[in-house]
Length: 239
Image 1 (cartoon, rainbow, N blue to C red):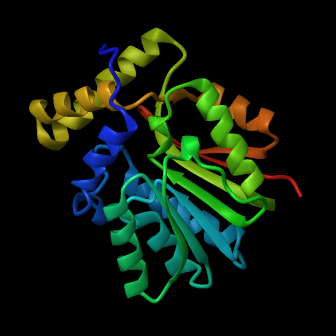
Image 2 (cartoon, one colour):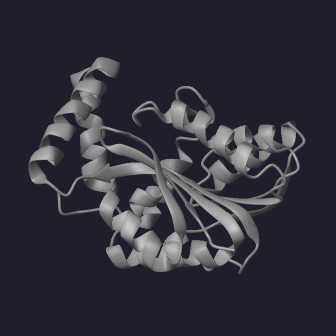
């Protein structure tokens, strides 16, 4: 494993050059197992649970795929978009505005360094973005900010790369993920993705994430999907 992790500035420049890839709802996240399924689940569950929601924060919004899909179900939503990359934010706002949805604010920032307003949002979404946090204290800090930013009864929806507590399971799951990537685009692509993860990402385990959410104050924490090294969670702020 490479001990060097790229800096936030390097990560920002990388995403600045990948706007078009992340603008495709079907192929923008093919390296993430079941990305389109999770997108569909989020929009369906959110619309079912929060038909009258007013405000959504999209952390690491990229080119806006999740905001678009959710807002098509709930067109009254006012959106706050947060991302490292200014070109990503511009693309997301452009796509949402083209469908006449309301973008209330765009924030170019690192969520690990960003304070959020208190009790403003009905919904917070973070799709394949928080694995860039580097330490467990970063996770605790960010979950705390998200919790405080939600209104009572609001919810946090997260999908991301994960790792496993057991070393044997972790190794076997990585083998399964390698097979998935090879089947998708071949061995060179598989190695490219693994090198990228080693250089750029710091995934956490589900037990740690769930315990940290509970310690933060969330309840009704559910794993709504898990496949190989990816999982999706929802956590609700009590009334």
